Length: 156
Image (cartoon, rainbow, N blue to C red):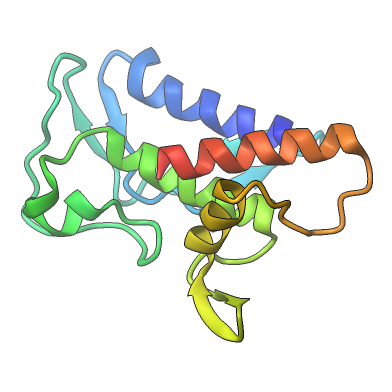
């Protein structure tokens, strides 16, 4: 799980910093991450991607693009700021939450008999110092899981 997350992050870094032109993907989600025979992730499906100059920090858009549940708030509402490569970082954070939670982020979790937005539930659990129970047996793996969860919530 950690190696897959790191591989996706390296792929996004290449798209944002490594190419001659910056490539904004705008559709980072599980369906657009392919795994090869060694479980190395590959970012795919550039149908919504947009090219921009590396020194260009803000991108102009006429319409929102992406998949509901993975779209950064600024992509569909200018009240949240300007659109930039950070929209992909937001989507990556949601993707990490999907990976560690083993579920789509749009599903709810149960808390005190009520349904709660899954990333919010994860955040509340970590803030209270409680563990997120998903059946990890090794203490070492539990620490990695917690780190990936925090990165996912920060990226979001």
